[in-house]
Length: 503
Image 1: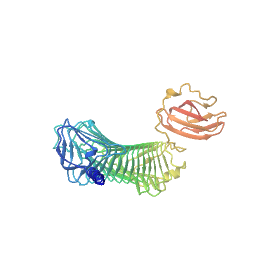
Image 2: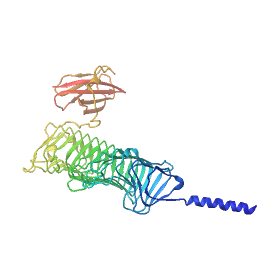
Image 3: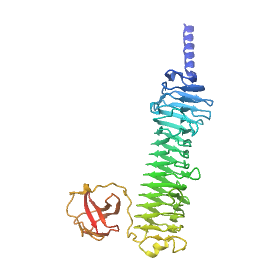
Image 4: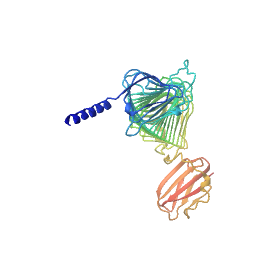
């Protein structure tokens, strides 16, 4: 009896050991639909694996795939690799070289990758492997969506040529990894709702661009090449990173919208930079250096010793720069123009810049009207501007018709519709007089308490703001051109709108 029990125990242990060391070596083409199951894991590549057109490879949750030499999985058919949160699929790239996954001549929309981990140094995945003089007869098309993934010490590339394909990476944790659109004319890449640290993001020359949407980025380099390579940063936060020209004549554009940029200098001497609805804080010697572009509905705050914005005049727009509804504060020099074509600055704020609000080093005149300079003292304003009157080789800065009050830039991009203001009767009693007027506005507030006043242009830009008003009659000066404006009064949770005509 004891021998029988002992024999059974030995068989059980033998089976358990067999289960523990179960593994599958794989290589070559698969001409029928194939499943890599958890029971056969790990899968060790002993050669290239190929999935032809019309064939699918399905990888079960929890499976591990090992690349111990420079092999790849070529997908011309379909890959379905959907792990789970508890049982992710793991690609171990223990040997650097080719990408673990290469997608060629396929409808990318048919493949699925989710809850997958790619561990380098081997490259993770790549779209195509084309060049200008070595194109595929059948190109990738559709969109490859890769979600809930982890990329560690690896690389992701788009390398098709003038294809219609796209790559979307979302809900990813990315560290020590390069995301690159390869020269030339390779597919657009979008990274959404992800965390990126200690990585490289590069839109190489002629690449169709990289979009960063709702991401948190730290200690990362972002760069662009020449000839239309571009990066868009939307609703994201960058910290302790930097954005640079990766080629020497990169023209961009770089677009930053509704984002926060912390201690992340931007150095793009000939590129176009477009910033809107964003907040920028820096503690380096320079905040933003770029050739041309715009800065609107945004704020840049320095460290009292650096230069916030330098316009070099480079790039295909040759120095055209527009700044509106924005603030530059707490710098040594707020805005420096070393070369320019047309520079227009309006409805913005410059203050607490210790050396100059504007330093015009170019020979072109600059229009800078309807701005707040931190003071209404004309001598102080003059002293805060470096131009023709300091060196007759330079252009003048026209700051006439300056603001008497700081410009409120909060919600400056709000969209308003005048029709919404018709027959608005949330509370009664307040009135505006005279109306029309020449810019001196009086508001009879009756017995209203803690009133907030906002004035909007007809296109929705807020041009005046005052809160916590507790007087019977409030007066202010509207330093804006003649036209129609909307006044919003709010008190104790109620609002009332009025049309105001300035003659």
